[in-house]
Image (tube, rainbow, N blue to C red; front, side):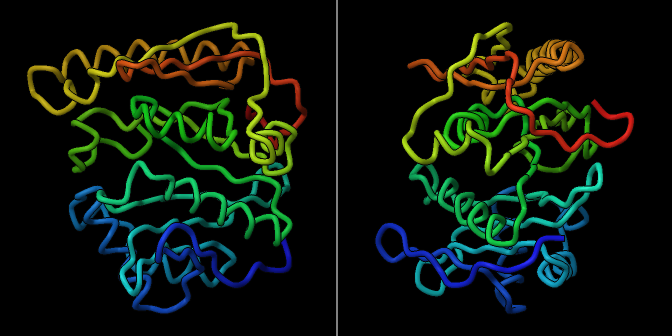
Length: 269
């Protein structure tokens, strides 16, 4: 298991500070912000107990604060695959009025610094393939890749953000010491690769998910993209790029990843 730990806090724009959380009241604030962001039913909320346990067993509870007010947080728990320890980032939440200003990325970079200080090489998390902004952040701004797709991971949830669709998820792999990540974070250089396959998500997906009339179209798109991802990953392709046009449409770019980073469990591709 990783040893050592990063300490201290990081000030970013204005009066916003990012730091690790240890106090019970801070974790209660995480639960409350989770409810605000996803609007889950109480039965589907990640409970206070898990935040407490995660902090005590080597996970991460990282909060972004403006003064005493929590405006964002990340929750991660330790995991193991193929005999290697890694961190699974279960949640990243940012209050609505603070979004689209780089705060989510700043929280992720704080997570990375803490993980490296404790000798972790990999962080993973899942994200909705129909969420265009999240995909762009994960792939293009952080340098994560994806090689796995999970069908309806959490079942049908109460969150209106899901639009009543199955909770399909891509698994982001953030190899913290990879050339891909180091080049991107050190000099903003996007690694080049030869796209083999493209999978598209139209900007209208948000409108479709929000209305009963459009939900069938959203479901059809999800079904189509699901099959394309599963086939691409079975062919050993990796999600390596993401493009957005001026209209807000998204496009996943898949190709061959030439770096040899993998913690595959027995029988897992």
